[in-house]
Image (cartoon, rainbow, N blue to C red; front, side, top):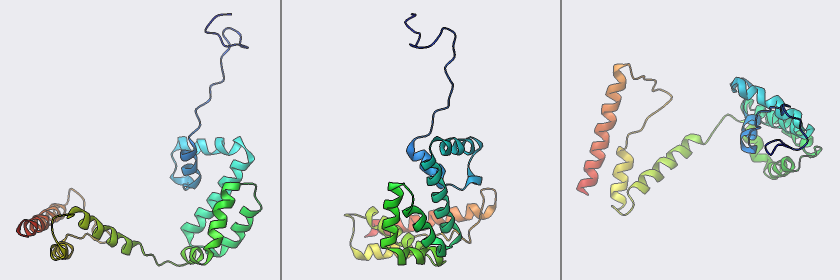
Length: 188
């Protein structure tokens, strides 16, 4: 036998060429994405993954159902989904469903109501960033000035492109307000 020849193969016989499967993290991402948002290669990978094992196919169906509830705010389907997961053989998904069941009221509110605390969380993150950038430099009075006079952008109303002249003026305003903030820091 030739040293480079694999045992059990004939010379000249080709091995089956199969594309490498994605990692578990990549597969989870593919299972949670909207099918229309995937590239052609990713769209071809999903059926290959689903055909590997019946449990993978069931996991895909249940994951897509849950994501659809999130996208369309149809929380009234949550009980049906929890029952389907409870009757499935998927232990990891059962663990997730049990934690969903423990906090069912809050999750049901999140799946049915359009209100969000996202803007509040964004402001808290911004405040923490400003505070961390000033660590060890000054006391509360300077922090107050930086918070009150820091540039804020409203992404819902600001739709500027680099080609428009208003884009350049927005940059100048931001730079000027940052210089003012740094000038205040230098004074304090």
